[in-house]
Length: 349
Ligand code: NAD
Ligand code: TYD
Image (tube, rainbow, N blue to C red; front, side):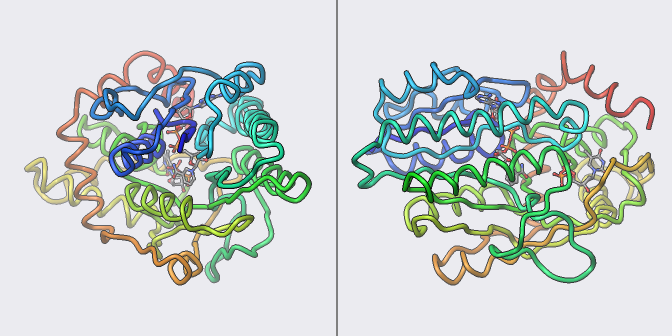
């Protein structure tokens, strides 16, 4: 079995690569990643010398390159995670999201279609997506697999478009595929532009914690290693053509989550309780900020027997420990271009 994992040097992708390389020594794993600001080979130091692992640097937007890679390797399966993934960046530069998330995905679909023509036995294109394609919920209800798409940000619009293309290739060309839509992930190796690693970094350095609006938006948080386990289960057992929602039934209002984070950080840094919370600073809200995401993951739980392995308090404590023990990783990714992004994103809020 030869698998292509795209975006394997990123946050979730690196956890998926690590899981597959270690769990399936009989598989050959090729990790294709452009190494954008979000991709970092440091994330994979522990598996880079494994005999069943190979890294290829390349851009999924380059169709010739993608086709040549498929011709060379004859992949049996694709786990597609490469994407531009941050909502705030999508507001600053939507076209970059169309390029990678839409055109990049269609390039991969074309290459898989071409490569598997006439023999789709044992083949599978697994597209990893987000709950944000469903739009924004009010106080009640959950996103189901049948919830109509209603994306609200350039990021979620580009992910929704890519999901539609994957389904269209299944319907039109019988390309074997599966899609999952997951809620917000947290854990080690996440680039510190997203809420949890950004706030851990800022608390550690006594910098303001920029809470958008009133901090009343709700997100449904899942530990990244539980997402990687779900991806493993869905890749191997998911039904052809199906969609699976992944989430931990773990909703938090941003401001409550931030208080919990501050509390845990105070304890771990030996600060008096309440010290880190003084860094909270309410700033101008994100444009078009989705109010609430909440996933109903019962289909995945009932049909494929997956469930989250940690509580949020446990997962958050593990996550904080990792960032505090890996300050070199955090310092290296926040040097250079990160500073420029931070200035642009937060200077006038
Ligand atoms: P990330 O931004 O941390 O990593 C993305 C990776 O893709 C990086 O390694 C980057 O170098 C690579 N990449 C970007 N453009 C590329 C291109 N043109 N060609 C090749 N590689 C390219 O993202 P993440 O948070 O790990 O998300 C992975 C996937 O999971 C994405 O598809 C995202 O939409 C989805 N997802 C993320 C979350 C979340 O909470 N982070 C939740 C649900 C779904
Ligand atoms: P984020 O981690 O960017 O994920 P997403 O927008 O994909 O859900 O943001 C999580 C929540 O935290 C979201 O409601 C926006 C909010 N947020 C802030 O309040 N301040 C920040 O600096 C960031 C990055 C996010």
